[in-house]
Image 1 (cartoon, one colour):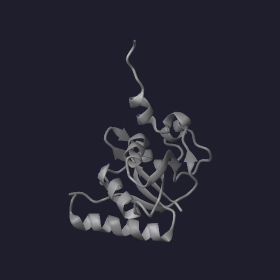
Image 2 (tube, one colour):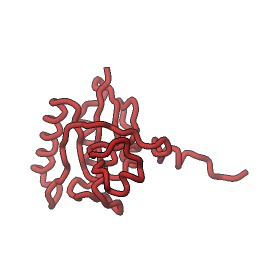
Image 3 (spheres, helix red, strand yellow):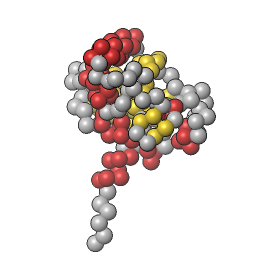
Amino acid sequence: MTNKATFGAGCFWAVEAAFRTCKGVISTSVGYMGGHFEHPSYLDVLSRITGHAEVCQVEYDPAVVSYETLLDLFWSIHDPTSLNRQGADRGEQYRSVIFYHTPAQEQIARQSKEQLERSRKYDRAIVTQIQPASTYWLAEEYHQQYLEKKFTTNHCSK
């Protein structure tokens, strides 16, 4: 049996690359969630008219990796205090968000966020949203495993 988890933490290429390295993750894909626009394309989301976040959806084996471990990875790969921005990427599509698929995931996510806030690791407030999962729109094929494709291609000429 596998479970799903969905995270937004800036540009989905890097988020997906991080989760693909995690033992127990069976598959990943990137797409859009949390907006109000049917069948959004990358350009729609980029134009900031859809309300969607760029997300990575993770299918994982809970017997191998816990949701808590996935959350720990999520917190470690981005700045959860940065509103609608990660690095040079700006806009609501780059917001920090956890989309939960079950009540248990919601509870664990909220506890994890509270723990991080209590740790005082950050000087600023954590702005990560925790929302119920909504329709997941798969991003275009060229976005799937983008960094893997880009950096494993042999660019040397013979």
